[in-house]
Length: 149
Image (cartoon, rainbow, N blue to C red; front, side, top):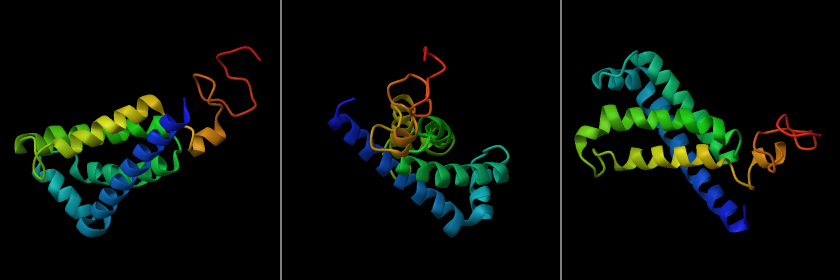
């Protein structure tokens, strides 16, 4: 991957991570777990209290992981799922445009899928921990399971 692509992924990863942290913090600190669960119940989201705790943790921890570039391929999928639920169960009936519509969570959904497919890029903790030249992560300096030593 060339330097400009790595910078582009790092910028997308960092800003998407900041957005997720902000939304997770809003759910935790402004709405509270009970308020978030109440909202989810009003939207007919199953197991609203469990769902509230899971989405708050996913957005906070996942957002921080994206910012750092740690476990991007792993954490992007739960973030994408959270946005799929947001699009399908909360925003779809509001049309396309924000604030009620689905354009914003759809953008986060697609960005999360993109990061899940591309990974962290060169400017990330993952890049320091894992050998970028292999298709499956291996600790730098140790042979990958998928190739001969």
